[in-house]
Image (cartoon, rainbow, N blue to C red):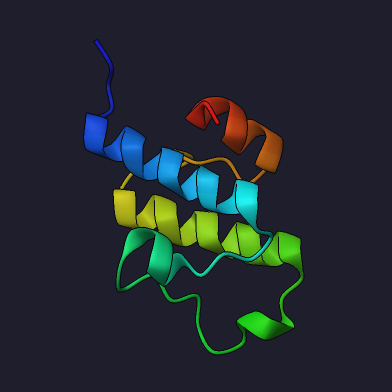
Length: 80
């Protein structure tokens, strides 16, 4: 039995798919309202953007390290 709900796993899969298709996806269009990375996101490097997005995503899900900040690991755990 999985320790994560199917909704959490689906959210992680959708999050990973967004980063599979783009380096800087608009998370509002992917996961709904309330996923803003802030005003200065245009100043972030692609890795910083991913790190900040993962940090916000994990905080919203409520599970530390639910989504890793390395793209290869994220795609592996999400199954994409």
